[in-house]
Structures are given as C-alpha cells and as structure tokens.
Length: 138
Image (cartoon, rainbow, N blue to C red; front, side, top):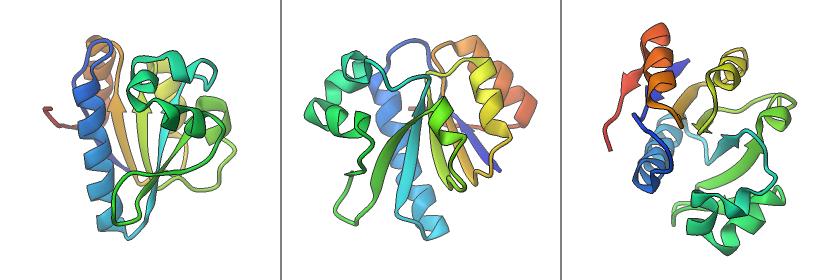
C-alpha cells in the first residue's frame, strides 16, 4: 500500500483540496476513475467544514452517490468507516479526519493508495512514522 500524509490540524479545506488532487493523480497512475473519501460517520456530513464547502454536493455524497470531480470523468464517493469495510475493493482512499484507531482499521483493507488528512497533527505524525508514509505539504 502506498501511503501519504497531509499534515493537518483541524478543519483545513486547502489540505482537503490537495488530497483530492493527489487522489486524481494516483487514480490516473492506476488507471481507475473513482476514489473514496472515508469519514467516521456520514451523519451530519453536510454540516462539517468540507460539507459546507461542497454545498449541495455534500447531500449527494451523503446519500451514497458518486460525484464527478473533474472533466476527465474521475468521481468521488463518500463512505463511513463502517461502510468501507464492506467493500471488496477501494483502490484510492482519502481518510478524512479519522482517529488513530479508525485509520488502523483501514490498514487491514485491500487499498492501493491511502491518503490521510488527520484532525490531529500528532496522530498524523505517529501514523506516518509507523508506516513510512510520504508527507505531502499543501
């Protein structure tokens, strides 16, 4: 598994945008169109900072539908920690604001690329050190 860390503390929309751009680049390398954003829970996603930024798109994602993110056909889906564990494949995943315990659960899944945007800088650094993740600055 290829791992990336975007150092982060709290709600930082720029880091989320960089994570999306990195996901698209990794999808292109793998020859896939879709990537997944994983959050702790889908409940109240629309009221989070990223949900507010996305506006109506957040509602679509929260319902489980994929949303196009560029003109090349790349799409993003939203999954919770519980729902992603039921999927058979998830090639490129952004772990958005998950705790250290939650990110550990993703480590056991068949993921090709994992991009971690932590809520806590300490948790992100600990995870990156453990897994030799590449740090990407926004």
